[in-house]
Image (tube, rainbow, N blue to C red):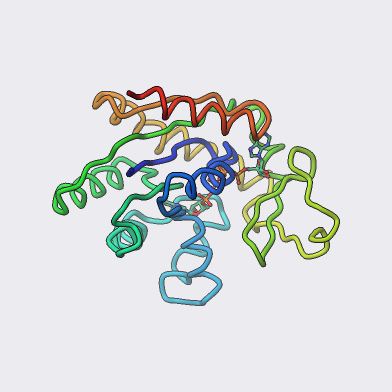
Length: 211
Ligand code: ADP
Ligand code: ADP
């Protein structure tokens, strides 16, 4: 299965992807994780992406598109993938379509996780992650076990200010790709408000009901 996760920052894309990919036997490809790895490794791409990311702006399409298309062309993605955080603009969506067409493959589903803006800042500012396992926690909504608490880190762009900038970008640049997929009958909408397990169940049911 080849699927895309769309939703505002903090919608739960990374959380739900981690819970779903194993059962679906597909790889989780997060453009944000790939970009953060490039920044950490100090690559040329990382150096160019860093300031956009810290400000909550989008990294230019020309940098992100090549990165993700190369990743989905690797052998471990041939059986399917769950794209998380890409595409985020119309040109990215079009570049993905062109690459899929050239490879003779098709997208199966675009899952939109809907969460109202009013809940986003609290989700983002309470987010913490485990640098050893990559697990995502929330100080209130998904509290970490005491054994890992001491090593958790907060993303540099998980400030209230950068979060508001990201939310604005989401509405201006990313939300417009939703009708692009809806018109092709690929869109599934899932309510992202509720407990983590509840949202996972909704996604599973939505995927099962596609017929
Ligand atoms: P995204 O990848 O869409 O930015 P994350 O999966 O990183 O979102 O989730 C953002 C934050 O919200 C994390 O701290 C996560 O633990 C928390 N979170 C995820 N799903 C839920 C939920 N259903 N209810 C409350 N908090 C959630
Ligand atoms: P979020 O938790 O807000 O969904 P991500 O981890 O997906 O965040 O992305 C973090 C940052 O990385 C974004 O604010 C943006 O600067 C950059 N980024 C990630 N994916 C893309 C993309 N597809 N296009 C442009 N910038 C991206």
